[in-house]
Image 1 (cartoon, rainbow, N blue to C red):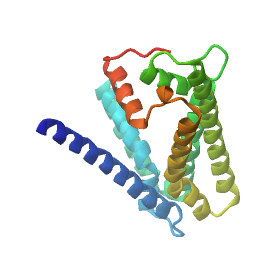
Image 2: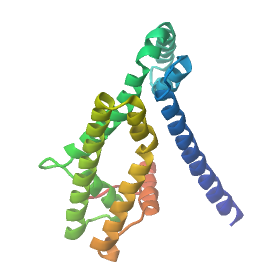
Image 3: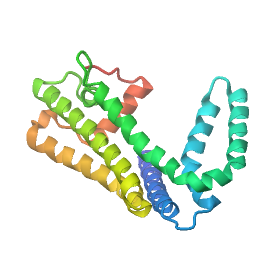
Image 4: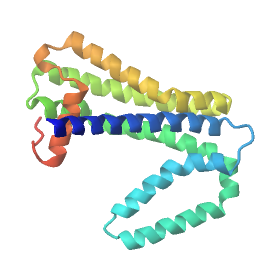
Length: 223
C-alpha cells in the first residue's frame, strides 16, 4: 500500500511540476514577446521549445550520431543568425502558437471526412470499447467543436499579430492560451454530463488511464 501511495504522490508531483513549468514559461514568453527592447535572451526564450523538440527527435532517431551532429550544426547556425533572430523572434512565437493550433485543427478535422473515425470517437472507444449510437453522435459533434476551436484560435492569433500591438497578441497567445484550453475542456465535460447517459460518461482520468493501457499494449483500441 505504501508503494502505491508513493507512486500516486510521485505522479501528482510530476504533473504539478509540468503545470508549474508550463505556467512559468507562459509568463516568461509573454515578457519576452512584449519586451520593447528585445535582446538575445528574448530570442532564446522563443526558440527554446523548437530547439528542445529537435534535440529529442535527434536523440530518438535510428540515425542518432548523424542526427546529433546535424542538430549541433543547427545550433551553431542559429547562433550565427542571432542578430537576425533578435529582430524577428516574434515570428517564431507566432509560428509556435498559430502553427500548433492549425496542426491540431487539421488533425481533428481530417478525421471528420467520410469513411474516417472522428478523433474524439477514437478516444472514447479506448475507454468504452464499442460506442453506443448516442455516444458516437456526441463524439462526432465534439470532434467538430475541437476543430472549430483550433480554427478560431489560429485565426485570432494571426489577426491579432498583424493588426494589434505585439503585447496584446502575446496576452492572447501566451497568457490566455492555457486558460482558454482549460475552459474548453471544462465546457465539454459539462456538456457530457448534461447530454450523455451515465454509462456513456468518462472523466479525464479514465481517458488518460485507458490511453496509457493502449500505448503499453495492455488493451487494444476498438471503435
